[in-house]
Image (cartoon, rainbow, N blue to C red; front, side, top):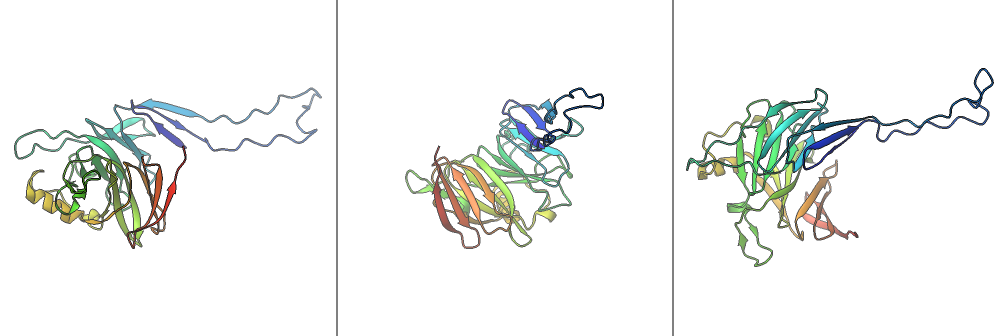
Length: 281
């Protein structure tokens, strides 16, 4: 089945969209029925389409890779939700993060999201990238609020600005992400922002991680969150906003595509760019 979701929330599921048309009958077979009259011509199989509407706006929507039929989506101030495609209803709604230590509301600002159920099958984790450069971890089996959030523009994760070459401490939207295996049974979370910065995060603690005891925004929360999901490495040489990331099933190759019209191929184990391909429009 193929699933398509638009920004305004309209969605559709197409069943048998890649099914082959049945072969035409051989000459002399099926042209005449039992009465000797000409029979009807064989009609090609039609794919069935199921349409539904989700609350918008939607900037990212992902289906659970474990085959549960759950669709996670969200965008902007539309916080993360889980829609059951088979039942046709929303079965889980995320709660916004608690107020920070200044008693100010923290807006969701959802930009991208990805399921991490293959990395932690006993849980229902969802990793979310925001427009203000943060990564939040949800667990639909445990609670509605995020377990913690990682700030990607402070300390070791601070990148360099492409215009000035100095340290860039401005929040950059995380517009692309993926959860993929890298080394045997180890899993990583890859996140790319609008400045061409692509980072890899370690998910080894994901099956046992707990809820943060400190409110978000404090230095102790940032430090604790970085210990739970530490950054492994960054990938250099990408020009423009990273719009798509994918990893080979063996974990030997990483591909990133940016608005600079190039596809970049990296070797995750050596953190080295092995190829750079120009993509024609």
